[in-house]
Length: 293
Image (tube, rainbow, N blue to C red; front, top):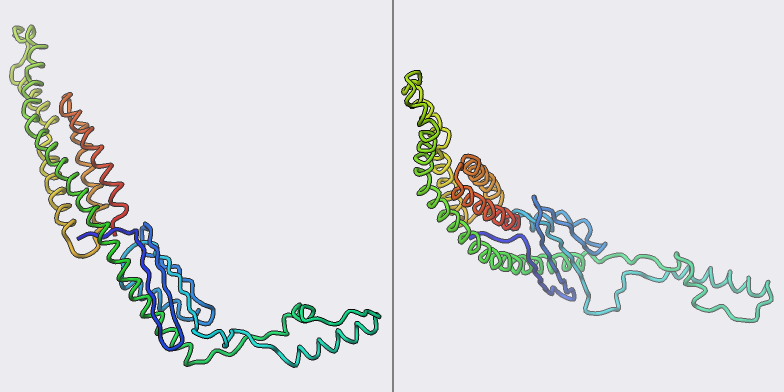
């Protein structure tokens, strides 16, 4: 069954005091691209997250957003630099006295200095728990996204299959009409040359050669045979288990080529009309498979 390249997945997991939430969104892309947003303390895990996603999917731009929370807010990611805070406090107090300012030094005056706060050291155990929680949440998000992409893929498969049915039906009509084109062309040529046929200087063998040439030029047997083969392979690809988006894209190019050749050889209003209708279906198929993984 084919899969769509659009989807959404969300997963959440808790390990110890750490809760990780992962959200994934996927859109069309020729190849696979995995932008990841992680907490700064886990930035070195970005490649591992990308590898897990790339192992699960073949194509698409899959954006991964990771959020990590702790049960308690007691352990903040920053700490007060007490030495710097005391030093700035004394400095501001001396400045207040020297300037003769009666207002006292307040906390907001101290927080204007960046080095009053320092980054807290991450507990290695907490960091490992966070990574374990992220892995579990990511696995859940991947499964949800895979299910959504398969669900949308089933709808795509149904639509593509119906369009292939239409192409095969139209191709059958072209094949049924094809022999009459040659007969009609021969009749028109004979009518145009009817007066000349009474001229002894006209070589009947040469005339038959010209008719044979016209018949060969109008013959679309090879194009119809190849088109049947391409449509059959397309059907087989729709039922394949592995990703087939690139293969379908190649096949639709070949299908378009054969339909275009049939149209250029038409020399018949009915066949020309069928060729135009087939081209419209091929273009709709081309648009749909842009979303196939």
